[in-house]
Image 1 (cartoon, rainbow, N blue to C red):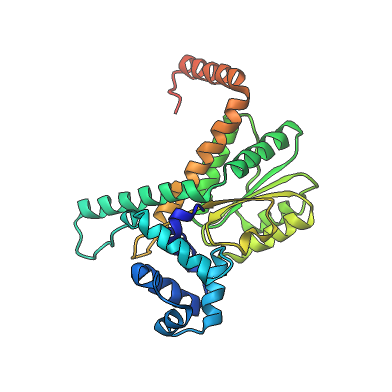
Image 2 (cartoon, one colour):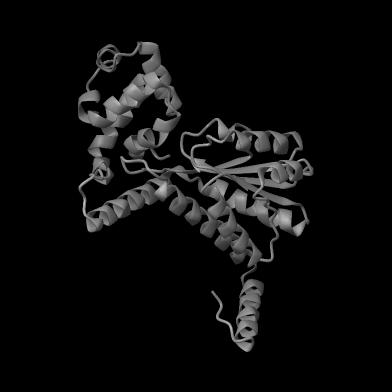
Length: 290
């Protein structure tokens, strides 16, 4: 993530912090200007945590220590990134207000994800998928709960590129099928918080089979991505009610669209020809291409 989005980085990392580290994160998010002038001792006292906890917190965010973190926080405030911080959803909000605030959350997350996504990793992920298809390697998909919606979307997009993928909704069949992975096959996992133990089991199996692994997850979820070859991070800023991961679906869907276009542009003439032939076939059959 680019340095200018430090506060958004903290917001995204909150689900993955320890109880003590969350105290630090919450205090910084609520008092960023004050923290920019606080020492490690004064901040740890204000948060009621030890100084080593404060140091661990800054290192989890990718800094060498508190001094480097504080310098970046000051730069963050100067660049007025706080203007992008979403407003809170209130229980008495009207339907229009809820829609506007959800839109604000999504836009803020989309802008922040521009900074968490590494362009080289996106290109490499697309190349893994393209080469796996060209060499007839298996492309195995996984995800739990709401992530299955993203898997279906991904399958449809890949099908339109004549790239076949494998996904079983039944977790036992998925585990069984995953044991058939071979070296250089591809395993792709969609997850937001990485809280499902099934994902870890499947990732472990894929890793033991020497398959290439791509993880699409929320920034800060380092545990899930430990065994990944490529991790594509989204910066999800959810509303304060946290009843559902509305924006995570939108953000991961954007990554799917990006990968689709990267692969499609590798052979644009052929893809365009195939799309036109599909449209003509549907027209002859009296259907509309969706």
